[in-house]
Length: 151
Image (cartoon, rainbow, N blue to C red; front, side, top):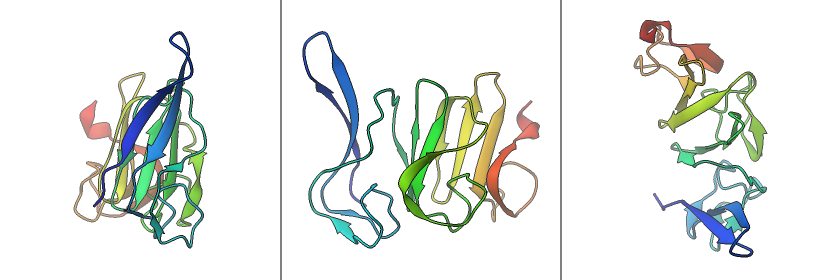
């Protein structure tokens, strides 16, 4: 798997423009680089739509999520297990926000995503076949669900 880097470009010493740049030779089979779906491999750096308030970047097996200073989380790429958190199983190359998420921290697994919310609750979505979401079931959640075992 190729590395994905979060680069901070500076327009001037006093103004910093945050942009996500995805590295070369990155597979794009499911739109996870932000390049149009159908583009199988990205050979040069590709810009994801501008996130001037991105705090980090988290990459699963085929999906990418970007937490923002506002607390919103935007995801794109493979969505076969609902790992984009949008209530569907449709993959997409355009980032969209996950509804109802106010995150201060986030992590992705191969086919799932979890966030710590501002109020301290933890929510996860995506594949749970091995119980990796901590929900107590072994099913798929295509929208965020609270992990009540962590209260």
